[in-house]
Image (cartoon, rainbow, N blue to C red):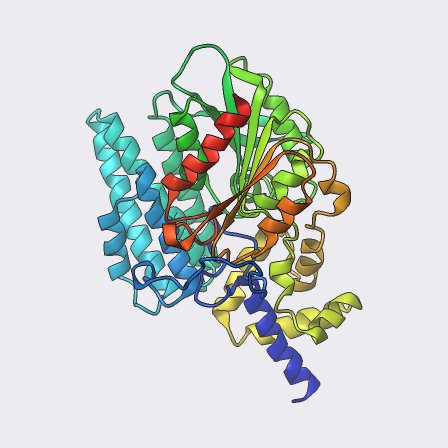
Length: 456
C-alpha cells in the first residue's frame, strides 16, 4: 500500500478509536456522565481477573454499540422517574435492529415532544407533580437525541435540540418541592450556570453534594447519577455547567480545561456562601470524564471532605491514542499539523458517521483541527506530582466491561496516597459498563453508604 493510501486508512482507524469500544461493549458516543465519556475504548484488555462477559441478548437492543449504550442510559432513567419502560421500548421498535441514528433521533424527539405536550396540559390544569414528571421525561428523551445529531449528519440540530431539553428540564425543576434554584457561580470574570437543590430536611446545616457531570451530559444525568439519591438521603446538592459543558459551551463559548481545580474552587467558594450548607461536609462526585477532573481538583482544593470518581481516569487521552497508528503518531509528534489534518479529513470522507462522532467529541475543546484536538487531549493526564497531593478520602468505582478507560480505576486507586476505597460493579449484578447505566439504585446505595460513613 502506498504511504498516502496507508495514512488515509490509518486516519479512519484512528477516528474509530475515539468512539469505538472494545468487543461488543458500547462505544463512547454516549457517556451520560453518565453520560458520554471522552473517547472510545483504550484498545487494552482489562488485566484483572473478572466476571466480565458479553452483554446478554436482553441488554442488546441494537447492533450499533454506541446507540445501544445511549438507549441503556435512557432506559436506566426509569429508576428515578425520567423515563417509562414502555415508552423506551416503543422508541426501540422504531429503530432498525442494526441501529440508525436518524431513526433514533426522530423517535426520541417525537416521544419527548409528546411528553412535553402532556406536561403543558397538566400544568395548565394545576397538576404540578404530573407536569414535572412529564417535563423531565421529555427532557430525557430529547437529551438522548442530541447524541444522534452529529453522527446522522445533521450537526445543526445539536444546539437547538440541546437547548430544548434544557428548557424542559428547567420547567420541571421549577415544579420540584422545593423548587430547583438557578444560580450563577463567579468564575474568572464571568459566571457559570449552577443549580441548587435544597433537601427537604430543615434541621440546621446539611451536607452538600457537588455533582460534576462528564464531558457531554446535562441535568438529566446529574439527577439520575447523583442528585436524586442525595436528596433522598438529606443532602443539599449543587451542580453546574463548567467550561466545555452544556450552557457554558453553547451560550458562553467556554471550553474544556485540564486544570479543573480552577473550576471547582470557585464552585466551593460559592457553596460556602450558603448558610444551609455544613462547610465541614462537602463532597464532590464526578462521572465519566469527571473521573479525571475530580482527582485533579481535589489535589488542589483542601476544603472537600470526600470525593467519588465514577470511574477512575488517569489519562483521558488513552482512548484517543489507542487506535492511532504509528505513522499518524509520528506526524503528530513531528508537529506536521497540515499533513495530519489532511489525512484525517481524507480518511473520514469514507465514514461520515465516524466524522460526525469525532466532530461531537472535538466540540467542547473549541478547535476544528484534528491535530489541535489530539494535542490538547494529551494534557489531560494525572502525574505523580498531582496524585501525591490528594489527601481527602476517595471512592473509585470499577465496573466490569468499562469500555472507555479499562484498568484506569485500579491505576487511580493504587496511586492515591490517602484514605481510599475501590468499589467493584459486576456483570453478574447487571452493573457492568461505564457509569453502571442499568443499575442506578445499586450504584446509589454503594456510593452514598460510603459517603454517609465518611461524612458522619
